[in-house]
Image (cartoon, rainbow, N blue to C red; front, side, top):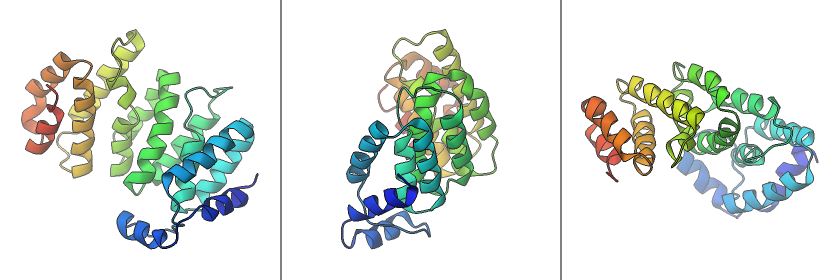
Length: 225
C-alpha cells in the first residue's frame, strides 16, 4: 500500500461538510478531509495487521509528509502499539522526527500516545525526551510531559519506572516559570494523573512548588487529592 492509497481510503470515509468544521476548530492552515477519528482508527487497525513494520514505516512517513490533518493522525495511530516487533529504533526515530514539527494539540497528542508506547517499552529513550524540555518550541516542551504520562499511572512502578517518574517531576518543576496555558495544563494533567496512583508524591510536589503554578492549574492538579 502506498501513502497515496491510504489517503484515498481516509478521504473515502469523510463526512460531507466536516472538513470545513475541522479547519475552523483546529485553526491551523493545512488540508482537512473531514474524516472522523473512529473511521481513521478502523483503517489503521487493519493496516497494522496487514503491513510489515518496514512497509508501515514507509506509509507513515508519506502520510506525515502530506501535511493533511487526518493523514498525520493516521501516521501516529499506525505506530500506536504496545509491542512492535522488532522494536528497534526505526519507529521511535520516526516519532522523534515528527515532534519538532508539532503545531496543534490534536496531532501532537496522537503522536505522543504513540511515543508513550515506545517509552514504556524502553525507558532509556527518556534521554532523548529530556532534550525536548529545553526546546524553543512550546509544543515540543509540552510533548515531554504528554509522552511520559504512563509513568504517572503505574500503581506499582518498578525501579526504572520510579526513576523515570522522578525524572519527569524534575522537568515539570522546571516548567513552572512558563505561564503558557498549554504548558501549565500539561503539568496539571501529569500531576492529576499521578495523584490517582501516588497521592503522597503529588501532595509533596504541590507543597514545594504549588505557589509557582497558576491557581487553576494547581486546583486541577489537586482535583483527586
